[in-house]
Image 1 (cartoon, rainbow, N blue to C red):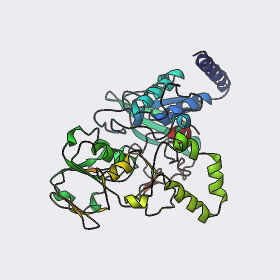
Image 2 (cartoon, rainbow, N blue to C red):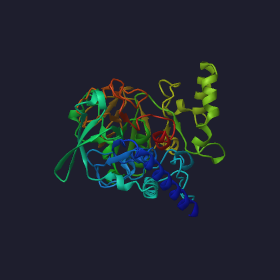
Image 3 (tube, helix red, strand yellow):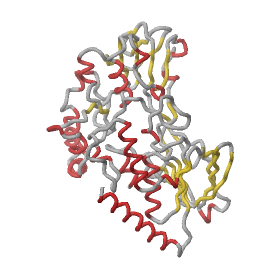
Image 4 (cartoon, rainbow, N blue to C red):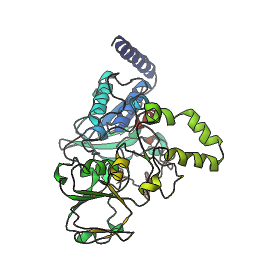
Length: 410
């Protein structure tokens, strides 16, 4: 506790010194969109550099993705009740604010939300956030080519306001606008059961005794299929391309990322010949179980995309409570027909765990952050490349093998 107080006082002293130096020159005002883990990191980094941040948060609290709500809210991410972190606390904390020792290595979403609130309180970040404020438009200032400034229009309690900022940091996340590729599933419009995106899933209660098909073998799809396998009468999970499945617990009980996200692993990947590096990667992914025997082998097995973390999926498959299926060929009124010709009859629910689309509806000029094939055209996944002045950044889009928190800080 004493160390925490000292750290907090030192941080305040550093900010005061930075603020005194900033009086010599004009302080830059920075607009930050979103008060999730990335937005909070941006507020603190701006303060440390003597900038003047104002964060606009559409909801009534911080946390973004990790703040669980019983019903999805428009314009913000939504998680289900049972979500746990996939990174351990030692590898996902803010660099100057470790997790409390009594927190578990992998946390339920409520514990991570508690940590986020502790972080914001410790560094006095809440005073820089305007809650229940909807950013409706961001456009270039009239002299942008000279000043690089932006006009940010907001709405709160029915009142519209426009403020000019020297820079904008967009931290609105990419788990907000669900993607259901309806055109890829012929007959879906005829299906008499219920289908919805995983964003709307909150828990297994209403699926008791029902037949459920989960489409998508990502983290959400796997979690939902495993959870439903304890209550639904039948659960199938359909995958178009397969995926590597990893356990959170690795050698000798250590968290996976403490052993795999290391400089040595990066050195081997960058130094070894490609063929040997790919062989070692596939071997490592298959060390827990042979994916081919479970129908999970990825189509492109050497692609280094983020694996799925699920400690229970293989056991649920081998016990028959979750059945792995290929991609859906078409739907009928009451069934799903798969590419291998098998049919799931009497289907009650279809849950699309098919990811999200990138969208920035508040951008006045949509060409600044273009979206092509569900990929934004940003330099290093951060900077719009065609601006006359580089005064806008998108924080939190970089997909890393590990936690988003330290990545956002960097």
